[in-house]
Length: 614
Image (cartoon, rainbow, N blue to C red; front, top):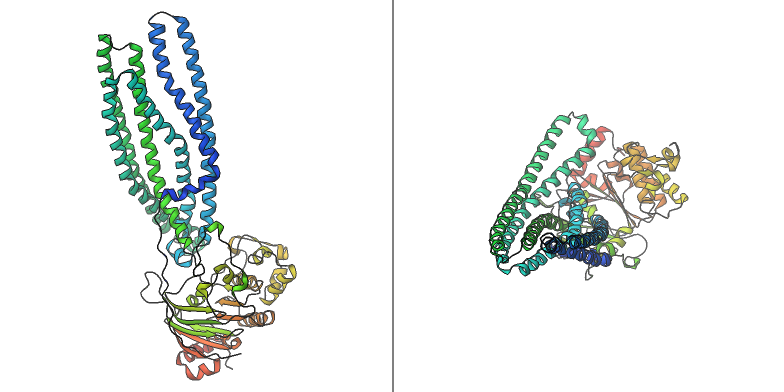
């Protein structure tokens, strides 16, 4: 089958991740482009509502000065009718603004959540180690909801409040420029308070979301492992642990909202003091005859509108603080997803737009695999998981990897579909550095059965077709027979159409492993990786599975990771790993003579009856 020796070559270059861009709210604004019309109509309709609201105090002043004070009831009735018309038009404008701003905000949230979910699917294993499921659930749920709410407020309150402030200041200044000086002194003070509110609240709300992450992670862990929790009678301890995290989250939320809640009484105090000052100064002018009663009432109304609008701005800025935190966290996922391996020299497209390259990047048929000076260290790990690994697997060969727990076997396998990239060295498949290949094309040629068997809710047939949606029933049955799964599948109530519970809960461990193997075989891969995928079946079934694979895929390159040496009988080459290094390689017989570590493994398993003595 060709040369099976370990080769030597110059070490590969170290590949470092690209630098990440800044996390800003503006990076998410393109999600509003499909809703440009709604984003334009909402402010225009709000402008109509604001214009009608600004007319009300002047009309009220006219009723007082020209109607009530002069006893002209006709003027009171006509002006009152005009006020009702303005109120009706304002209602139409406000309702229309709400409709269109809701349409834009909900569409924004829906599209963002869709692409964020797509981004989670593109995360590398390194990023998934850093962003656990609980954190991703929070970002997909709570953080997107915060951003959606902010867009809603942006199109409504952010338009309404500034327009009301500017319009009311102009109208108040037109009534009495001297009284308006009071406003020019108060508004900067309130603006400073609002600025401090944002400055202080952003880091506090960031802490709230981080604690919510922790809460969701604990919830996810306990729900996924509820049977283990019950089996070890840890329900009370886990409930206490969750209660502590929940209390920590509540304390952080109270600290964050305390600033917001204290801000409201302060703004109300300034509002009331300003009104008192206006009434005192305006009353003196009214008694002096330089200001009418209607003008004073209108001026006070405008002051109330100004200060209440500034209060609304405070609430908007609070929402902005929370949205800014959410935007950082959402963009962190997008930036991490944009770090998904892409061909060298190519530009990473947005997740939703990324398409695989043509399949011509790899030669047809079985694939040769080479590890050239490969090293990898996990984040925060004490020692490298792999260190200077040199290994060549000939095309079409079956290679078995052995070693103690933590030797680096699964890590070595995970490099092939680029679930991780090495820190140093080069991995070649079919003669190509895999960093020059499109990851989707590369993974389409690899059948990878991992240690943890994952099945999905749905029928047996749907699970087998997971990676090959167009597979025929004949192909499905052939893959199942090779994986020794057909016998138990046909005994299920509806056979291949039997519905599995979540994660295949209604199947045994061995049955789940055989379905997982059949799912990979259905791809007809050029490279098949079985990562301890037969640990839950007996030796006879394991032998039949390995034999069935060779019959179904006679030319496929196979990498078998196993703890039992029974797999060595089916291998052309056996490789022994220890602490991330290749310490021995050869056939089963050769290693029994030359490798003390392999002999120790053989002796221990022979004593337990898990390996043949032949």
